[in-house]
Image (cartoon, rainbow, N blue to C red; front, side, top):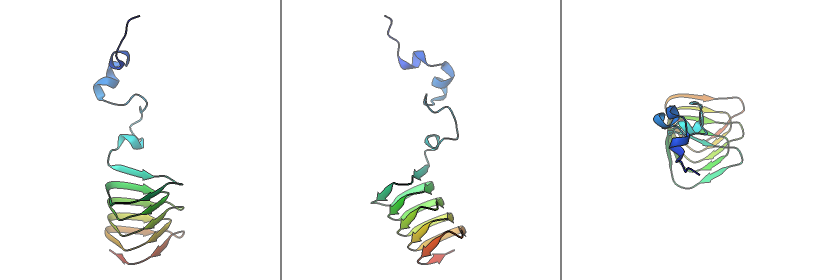
Length: 116
């Protein structure tokens, strides 16, 4: 039996583009290395989060520094936030420093200071 490497079995266009085989869509989360998603039921605690774009649907207990932040309805953030744009649907406890637009929806709960 002839042994072939994965790159020999895959179509050439995928290998040339450097894409992963199971991610054929360009809009998936894994294709954007600067986007972080914390899913519902997930709890994140620890050091600072520094990223370009973050979507939070779970619980986060740390400081967040990001350009764009989306806080889902069931999300809970405990800690300071610094960003350019934020949209809050869930709960935030801590200081928020926004350098651009802050959108706080009807379902949101914000406890702390908001500077914009």
